[in-house]
Amino acid sequence: MATASNIDDLLQCPICLEIFHDPKVLDCQHTFCANCLKVHLASPSSSILRTSNAIDCPICRRRSNLINNSIDSLPGNYIVRDIIERKYGTTTPERPPDYNQQIQDRIEKLQKTEEEEDDDDDAIKYSNYVKPVAAALVGVVGGLLLAKGVKKLRDNKKKTKSTLKKNDYTLI
Image 1 (cartoon, helix red, strand yellow):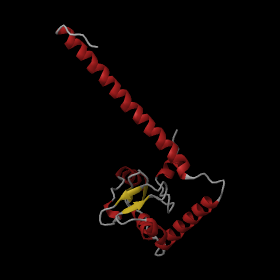
Image 2 (cartoon, helix red, strand yellow):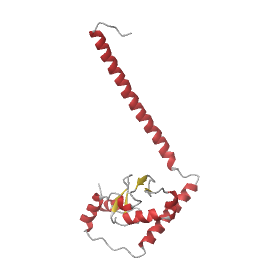
Image 3 (cartoon, one colour):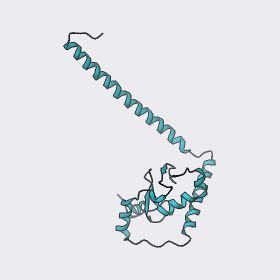
């Protein structure tokens, strides 16, 4: 059963840890404040790894395309926005003047933590999960395509036998 605090957690930006302001959704379906994504996009460590007109999700690192390299081109998460408006009203509290710097500091801290985890020999690498899952998906999709092809061949063989039988021919 969902409690009020669980719902509040869903309405909280994972970067600034506050209620979403202008929630934007990435291709991976993770949601962030538009301003937090702008700060992330402008961060030096993000720009080194990033190609133009794309942003990597701060959580799962899946790439989302941007139009004119603008966060505003991302779709808004209207469901989250509507829930926030219904729960908290239409006005959102003003943010302090140094808010962007606070967000930048949090992003850098998260990235440093990630780098420390990457250096740790016991850390489980992201690719350790992705490669087996991708291989399994390729196997499943390949198996499904193969099964579909075999079924089609069997159906065609039955049709051919039926046609040959009607015309008094035999299939070798």
